[in-house]
Image (tube, rainbow, N blue to C red; front, top):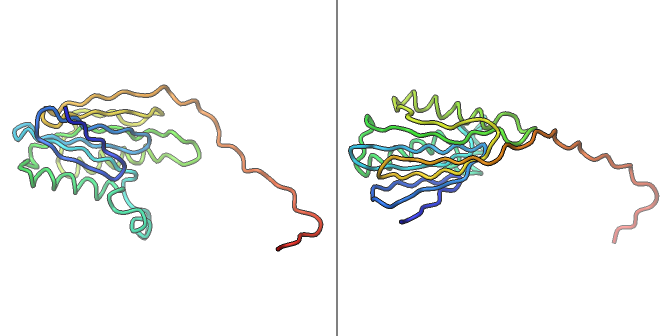
Length: 175
């Protein structure tokens, strides 16, 4: 068995028996695509659906971290290896809202994945999106099968307040 670990911004495509792709997810989303006739599949792992505003953050982080790019790269890699876009089926995982105070990043990522796949005419055959649990996903691209296990629910705790410091008093010597 050959194991491929998919990190943020990565993707992989394989069509051989015995290959397992795996990733760990919090608010990120992984989309697994499979062509059952070509017996070919792939997985990506993206941090955010789309780059913010003016796109300057995308340049700093790299486009591979954004779903809009990661999805196109994965689809194109599958088609290059012989997959037919019309036969692709998707499994979607992740999109948890784990850290309070950061907004609903996971929910937004899950919504992006659903919208993108619907717009591309790719049906979702299974999804495990949202909630407040991290996930470990294993995908067998040759068979198009996936396993997903979840962590324990993360307790809801409010973000810690910022510390307040008294202004410094007295003389300060700089050297």
